[in-house]
Image (cartoon, rainbow, N blue to C red; front, side, top):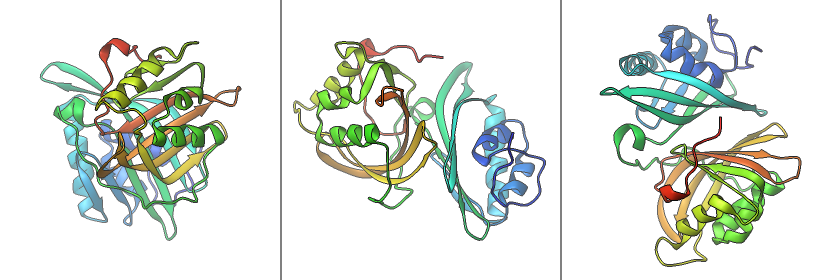
Length: 280
């Protein structure tokens, strides 16, 4: 695997930082990860919070590694995308709680900044772990200049308007949305489970035409995958406490969306009757 272009201290870990972050922790290599991150790194996690610099980061990583070991943590990679200043790895984190195995979709962002500064941001829902949704404060400022591909822009605009027809039209047939809980909603000729998901989402308070507004923060795009970090500020047309999230948009040869995978902790519950087991 190619060595990432970050400029941390020498370490036995090789590969892009977003790729090696969780595997290093679940394999008890927190010391190697610390050397790789360097003394000007910051890590932000939904459960463990935000920590920067030494020696706080050393204690933070050891605490994370111990927490994962106690719960028999395992990480499986799903996809990867890199941009000019950041790389993003998607995967699933499996944990054991009182004999029950839980799998949580996770996205890890490694942003490279000048002067050897590295920031790691993890995105996942804490509900499968803690039983409740958490409000995650914004991690990035609003940036309207962030460019996204046409089908992503179309989907974001339709989502903000609550336009179900336009949202579904941004996906090609056979495409699927996978929510933060790991449930998948597939589009068929008549819209299928994907349309049902959005119909329930926007009719939950008796209104239609009331969407979800997401402010763009930053993105990594390799021409096929676009990983967008954002802040949600309105849900069903109503202001909410600004909350951080990330979604990965996969484009198909049709020019429409083939898949969207969401990583956030915002309560957007869809009916179980419409859910499909995530595709491998």
